[in-house]
Length: 390
Ligand SMILES: Nc1nc2c(c(=O)[nH]1)N[C@H]1C(S)=C(S)[C@@H](COP(=O)(O)OP(=O)(O)OC[C@H]3O[C@@H](n4cnc5c(N)ncnc54)[C@H](O)[C@@H]3O)O[C@H]1N2
Ligand code: MOO
Image (cartoon, rainbow, N blue to C red; front, side):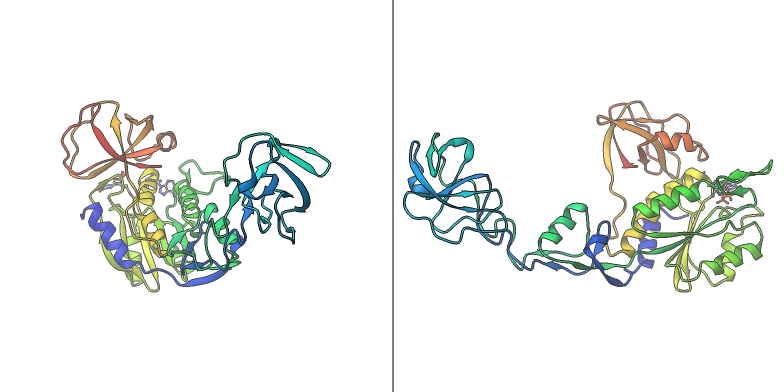
């Protein structure tokens, strides 16, 4: 058995970032930028009014000063002339500030009669003007790699970047194994259960930006598993669920080996998730997850997620950890790193009593997995513990 950290290192060593593709900006959210994006213009491209009001020369903008309104500057259509002494231009938010104007008086602070306005309040001069290039200048960069959030997409649009180069999304084949499994919605036989972690992992993969492909459930025979592995060809990553342990029907390791899988490791000192395996299989990477539903999901967060991020060119970091205060004492740990379902609220974390790796109700109630290193001593309520947010 190897440690969680060594297993992660071995996994990341297998991964190379996938190729890149150019896509329309409208599809860019949740993708990873592969080449720096460079602004094609200044924003704003002109000094712009920040308010609805009147553009004047700030040197003249005393309380009670009077101006003649000589024109209008609207967003999208500027006032073509220049403001002279004693003149003002009606202006709207986002409109170009006319030449000669250095200040915008908001319309709540003037009185208007016909073409004449009078400033009614003392002014903070200059004000209410956004200088050209205030947000960014032409040539400003968004550095790759970067996972593009909706906020980044807005900025890219503003930079007039209509297409972006991003890493390809990993295609992931998901194989459930076991004679006992049927799909949700089917009618299980008396000894059957519903394939569940398959769906949890599918959802997690989507969240991570991968393209999951759900393959038919492989039965507990060599032939069925071989056939399903063949269907998985072409995937960047093949994930099996179940059949990873030592029972007579646990065929994933021998069948994968017979199909040429070069194993990087098998069995990790963690709980749940011990019978994890990984390696390379032809053009694909392979990750064999344990079948117990919680084990599979925990391995999904701890191992699959960093792999998918690294395939998309992001730094190959472990899932980010946080800390919280324990709500109750925690017993000493055994030889495997323990990931326990827990609920964190207002900085305090409660570890659930029931931790059997088949209990999806407890997983669904949890919003965190506490991490206890191998052979860690008992901890007292109030001590700080690390956790993975779910
Ligand atoms: N003698 C030993 N027995 C077991 C050991 C061991 O070291 N020695 N390890 C245990 C641990 S830890 C785990 S975890 C499980 C993992 O076993 P497998 O990966 O071989 O998984 P299966 O036996 O196929 O299934 C385990 C359990 O999970 C259910 N399952 C499987 N796939 C799904 C799915 N897609 N959706 C929902 N549930 C699924 C399956 O029906 C079993 O109940 O082995 C222990 N045994
Ligand atoms: O350690 Mo196994 O992965 O649940 O229950």
